Amino acid sequence: MHDPIPHWIAGEPTTGASTDRGDVYDPALGTVARRVVLGGAEDVDAAVAAAAAAFPAWRDTSLARRTAVLFAFRERLAARSAELAAILTAEHGKVLGDAAGEVARGLEVVDFACGIAHLSKGEYSQNASTGVDVYSTREPVGVVGVISPFNFPAMVPLWFVPIAIAAGNAVVLKPSEKDPSASVWLAELWKEAGLPDGVFNVVQGAKPAVDRLLAHPDVASISFVGSTPIARYVYETATSHGKRVQALGGAKNHMLVLPDADLDLVADSAVNAGFGSAGERCMAISVVVAVEPVADELVAKVTERMHGLRVGDGRRGCDMGPLVTREHRDKVASYIALAEQDGATVVVDGRGVAPDGAADGFWLGPTLLDRVPTSSRVYTEEIFGPVLSIVRVRTFEEGVALINSGAFGNGTAIFTNDGGAARRFQREVQVGMIGVNVPIPVPVAYYSFGGWRQSLFGDAKAYGEDGVRFFTRQKAVTSRWLDPSHGGVDLGFPQNA
Image (cartoon, rainbow, N blue to C red; front, top):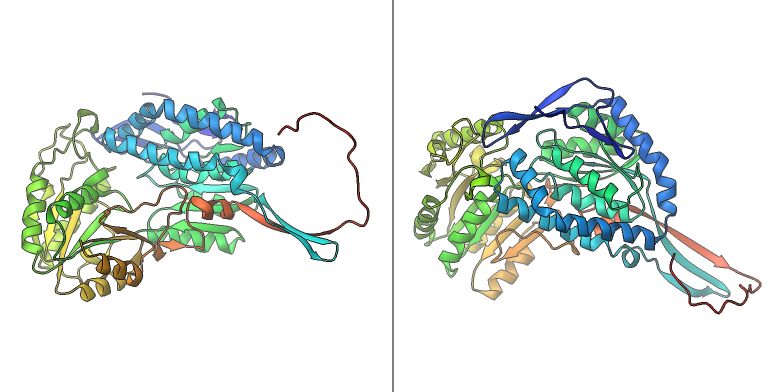
């Protein structure tokens, strides 16, 4: 077996102070593929110290030079994206095509961050009072912490890290211990791109590392993506230590289907959005709300498509891979039994899937549940696996009320050919990201990602202009000069440096 997956501190891989190790599985094989160091407080302290030491020089580096590093990183990431996708498939289990899509969506945010010179501009008011000018600047906040989840080990760090670095901050990333290799791969790429040592650091570990990062006095902000209970914990703990926080939590995303919708498009979209990445997406559609009388026909069309899905090793050209761990697979499967107890109809049962992969892989096939009671935990809780529920309602109004009554407000979609109904839906539904005939409404990089209610803790969403504002602080300057000053004669063409 290879050496353990290390931390990355001050520009070098290191196993750090802790002797604890964790298993990293290949989910399609069900076997331990690597080991990872599990850092503690000492390792976090070392990473934060390296970031704090690197921050002043990086903060003072010109926008032109920072942008050059971002562009160099962007070109390397684009050229080697297939290499990163293979790492994601080996440790998370998602199929190669889905892994490539993850890298591509992360690359969009890198593209956005390359425009930091424009994005960080302040404002200027000349002669606000007689002889007085007022202007604003945006400055980096310092050392920032990023805690990323297992389901997107490359994309989520790329949502935060490029913008934070472009804005002049230094970063400490704590990736999921379930699939940590991508974080070190990215660290190596940043170094190749010319990023100074210490500006980007990685600490591997579990809860002890997270807790130290949340409480460390030299960490100015925390960015987090994960389940709602942990997001709430991260938000409350970090804010109690005086940090600014953006904590993105869980979801229970609904797709409202009106009777005039194209049911073939709906069925395709429900299968794609429900079972891509084995349902391990916070933007997965987990509930289809069918306005009668279309439910029976829609269930038949979804079932037909599900029977054609090939479940297996993501390196074999399958449609859907395994779940990330055996424990998570078993937890998701337990919801199917619970649905039966609560009176739902199990139309397609993924527990008996015959995968194209090793017998010990963490397999659970796509599952379709019909007539799910809204009182059931299967409906109210985030399952985070390939389980799609059908809930039947009588009217548009009943469907919207059902969506708005839930605890989460991450993403939702409506499928209809009625423009008036779609417009009314997007105005009335209490959800942060909305799709109209689009099942997974993840905003492009120049907007911002984040939900409402228990899907987001803190005021700032991820990436886009919200990301730039989160990773910078504004200064307002009121200025008066009583005497003119002269810079002398220089006939050379002005240059950025």
